[in-house]
View 1 (cartoon, rainbow, N blue to C red):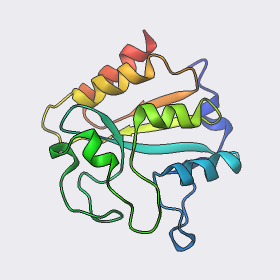
View 2: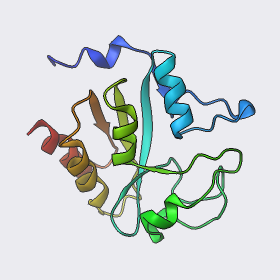
View 3: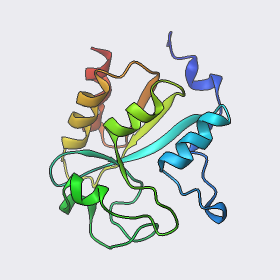
View 4: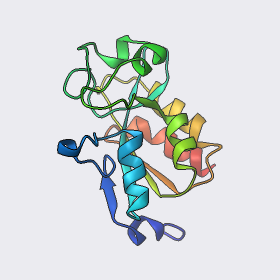
Length: 155
């Protein structure tokens, strides 16, 4: 497909250039900065909050890397953003914050995480945020309904 050569032009840092023993935790601004500094594209994951915000986090619940244990889908974006990562001062970002942070300096590959329950809010919110993002970005997801984001981005 023309116009997508950027997808193979850079190595892609899975969840950013993270290194937990050095305090660089996956899917954080610190890991994304390290990826940019090394000339990598960035793959990251998105989850939906209770109030419909696209949040940058792999797991559907807190606890593995963060304080707390609640499901993200049951928390507001503000409550999620207040959560501390166990080993750093980084906080969970919204997709809009990630886009502002990266600002086109590296390609983004976004995975929409799904609970396979037919909820399309994450795809809709991602499409809304990405509509004004000028940098190179691709969206992937397993559930076919999530293609709505990619289709609206193509416009």
